[in-house]
Image (cartoon, rainbow, N blue to C red; front, side):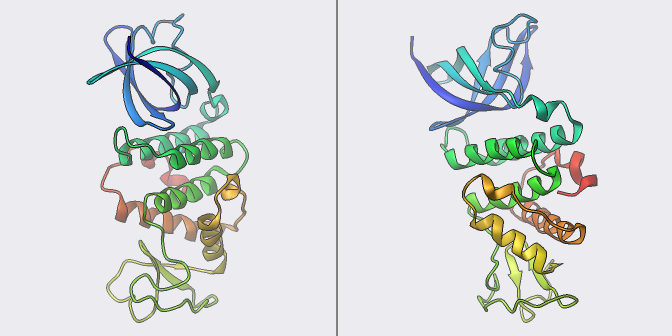
Length: 248
């Protein structure tokens, strides 16, 4: 039997037959794959805990050129506290769906896997809406779409660091100077939101989510996250609708 061992996160689960399911696993060193899990929906299945949404586990998987099947596994973290609180569940589902829609199959993206784990952990410690904004900014940066902060994204002119009411304008590619703003979709961002965006993009560890913002600045940062998603993501993220009332 051709098997391999890998550690990963369940991004999606889909019922199959009467008692089976197929799960999308995001595996360290291997990327995203679809795995058949026989009997995983039975009440006493040994696969129940390790095949539910948000489960992070060590897996043993059977492989042939066109098929993956789960042999066994051991749970590391189930992120139960994400599922037990509605707001956390909505934001966590959004994180997983975004990764599932954007990432290519069997393309290792270990940095994004770590970001997902840190983001799910942060939902239990910090304000979920701020965690979501930081997650989107960092996810887009890791995907090659980091917004420009210190210069105009169009002409490269250095930032002027204006203060309200003359806040800087930001578009989907980042800061836009006065000469380049005409005809572009932009939002105003004051010093607080700009500093928060710069902080998130500069961080590499779990500190990505450790910041606070007043309500006005948080709304501005949410606007930037939404612009990034609208411009750079061609996929419909259904779970996004669940959190729009709370802002990203």
